[in-house]
Image (cartoon, rainbow, N blue to C red; front, side):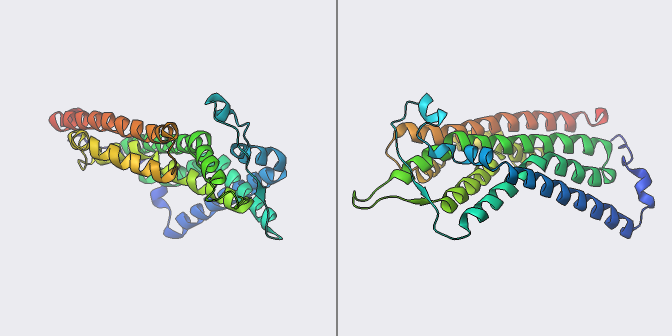
Length: 269
């Protein structure tokens, strides 16, 4: 085996434990300041921010128009004295964190990078960027597809015409944020599958063998998320997750080939 390059931050070996803590403290302060500043900016852009947040609750949302969905009416209400202010603060904070997240990842990587070898740094950058982009894609897919059809069905569902739906703004925003987080994590499937394959813990053959089982699980999860008899909605929700599974198989297969190449030709790596 060839020798690995020395750690990129070799001069940092002279730093003491307390020096490292001081560097970490400085990075954390920068993260907090950046997050607070962007959250304040988002808070000040209240009208624009909530135009985006509340768009899926409107019958004229462009996704509904593209799919020719029938019109619906959804009424959002406020039931607490400070509820709207708390929702405003919560949504602004999440928006601020989302905007500064690349900077936060950069600061974290800059702190960790000196302890990594050159090849480890290169792989870490690729995995981190891929994971971050897939998380954003998951959030976007939820906002454009999953959440609109979920809130449209559940917000208009009635057990009786005598019972009228009045959805609170807090319930609406909490559902949007939690579902965005869930689907952001779900969209990490290809990255996690690739990492497991690189460590020899997952094989493409296994994923192909249990493809039918995976499809059943995906459909069940989609049915839970969108409990409606509308087959179109069920397909729209389950299709992205199934495509992620198929993409994961291809990535795992590629990782297996690369691992085999590295083991058969160790001198070149």
